[in-house]
Image (cartoon, rainbow, N blue to C red; front, side, top):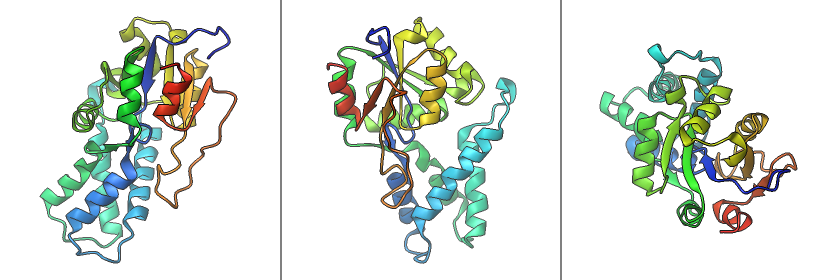
Length: 239
């Protein structure tokens, strides 16, 4: 808990990486859509670079609610560049769109649904994702994720870690930041929330980028909670 010792009233969750296994899902979808046509392509590497392209665009994006850049369009444009770079020219337009939409079909980690079920008995649960609202809805419906509310950067007109995103979620919840815990496997995300007075929970996801991926899973006393997964988080929160 925080220095105040107060339990949070609501938990905000990052979605891509923290609640869902994007790497395995998108790698599997790429292999399926490829249909064996590109056996020499390392899809794990491909997906890793695709995700990196997404972060590059988000870091340079400027807030503009009237001319919002959807995350789906970011993934779609990055995919076109990567396919050309890898010499993959035989994907049809429907196949390209199907692959771009793989980011809206992400499977939850095994601990997520049972962990959320336990947490839901005591806390308000909501997302706070950089993914599009429609993507979070599709992912949640598909994975049976029992959120009480869906919040996304699109609603604030800026991407995390901009303070406006976290403040927007607190405003909609009708709570002070100190009454809300931000849960994520990305330290930049929870550090940004913590700087605004939110409680913080780091959840380690060593397989976020696959078996050979480089991920920071070290615990840090800076965070109120460090957890192995959502079940461990539920244990530490007394659920």
